[in-house]
Amino acid sequence: MLKFEEICELVRLVGSTGVARVEVEHEGARLEIKGRPQAQVVVAPTAGGQAVLAPQVMIGSPIGPETLSSEEDEAISGDHHVIESPIVGTFYRAPKPEADPFARVGDEVRVGQVLCIVEAMKLMNEIQSDMDGTVVKVHVENSEPVEYGQKLFTIRPS
Image (cartoon, rainbow, N blue to C red; front, side):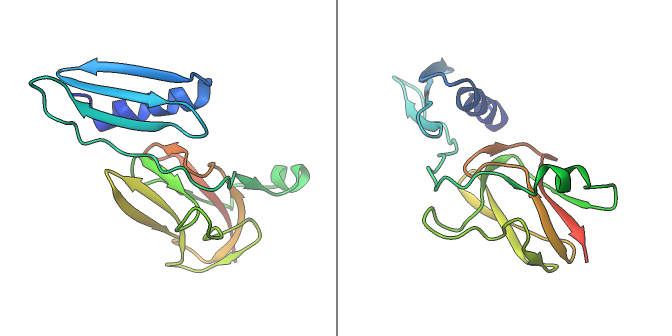
């Protein structure tokens, strides 16, 4: 059986390389990843095998990463705070595909304010700000797989 991290890595590779479709059979389970707008994972049992619990990547609205102008971006210094992903999963900037993002560049945020959701094994994990400040950069595209410790947001402390 493929591990969750291995499935996430395959989804990430398909999404970043532009491959149209990848199919893998492993220990009685079949995994198919389609690389259209966003990678989709379909897991089905094979003869004599059991279904594998795997993430299903929602196709969300096209909310990409954001940053300040190049001059402002270069000015981001060591006193800025980075919010990192505490888990492996899929990054969502909004609660629903048609909704506005939780936080945009330039928004003032407070401790405890939800910045995004990281879905892991069908559980929606709200990622909250751990400081007051201004969002200066969003590092990840909506619906993109993220790894543990990957940068999500950069915040200028207030």
